[in-house]
Figure (cartoon, rainbow, N blue to C red):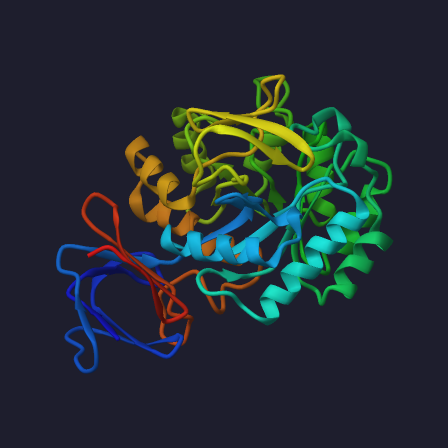
Amino acid sequence: MILKNAKMVDDSFRLRNADIAVDGDRISAIEPKLSGGEEYDFTGCVIVPGFIDIHIHGCVGADTCDADAEGLAKMCEHLAREGVTSFCPTTMTVSHEEIGRALGVVRECMLHPPKGAAIAGVNMEGPYISSHKKGAQAGEHVKNPDFAEFKDYYDTYGGIIKLVDIAPECPGAEDFIRQASKLCTVSIAHTTADYAFAKHAFDLGISHATHLYNAMPGLTHREPGVVGAVFDDGRVTGEMICDGLHIDPAVLRITFEMLGKDRVVVVSDSMRAAGQPDGAYDLGGQTVYVQSGAARLKDGTLAGSTTNLHQEVKNLVGYGVPFLQVIQAATLNPAREIHEDHQIGSIKEGKYADLVVLDSELNIKMVVARGKIAADNR
């Protein structure tokens, strides 16, 4: 397969003119005027790496914590059509047994991959969070960090956990951060920590911030909070939900400017209502009400999103964030956070053939996932 006559975003995240040849599941050549085999003409389009969503609970009626292989397969197929070629199914703050069942099903789906987007590993959002900033997480299952429990999950299910959340002010957090950060990315999340406590946690090994601004102390001129600590520490990457609801567009622009091209990750944090009509849905054992695409608990608390990375990319470009910075934040940066950037996240010979073809209005014309056409909207 050869994708011809389009501009492409190269592995340095610059636009260049080149054709892309795909052999099996890999990119085999990137050169001008390639020929041979099945050719697709994408004159006037731009080819970007496949999007990577490292924080997604569910979509199209399915949820990671359902522990249902058929539901995960539905997610894989749907996400690929939306340009997401890799993702991390994300667990909620649920019971010990429910987390274990979810991890077991995800591992089976990684061993026997469904069609569509590839599962890159698991994101554990909870249960090691603050009950004071639990957001839409179920309070009865919140617990203090327990590294022995986490290590058991990690070992039992084949090391598939790529990211784990923690509120660093909770008892046991310091030891947890030191040890867990040797196994996967540790993220500050659902926390009451102040600036000093957050900075200390970064010194211990936290290198990521879950849905920056949401469920954490914000930045003010006298209390920098967790947000200020992230701004002030080049070791830490901030993920953001860019649906225009969780964070004001002006704040999104400011944050992209502050953190630069390498330290922002776009995530959906979507729940099972994504790709579904408005109505009532379950999220981690709680009822979520979706109206005009906004997902909230009965008390009005935001409960994840119903967006997807492709829509967020379009949002951000519309808000005035530079196109190439947006694309890197939805591709290479998340790949780095889960230590998979040697395989995915950019268009480079030898990497997986995960490609999204966009027209001049950023609509999807084609998605190639692991060398197979997952969506064709020509």
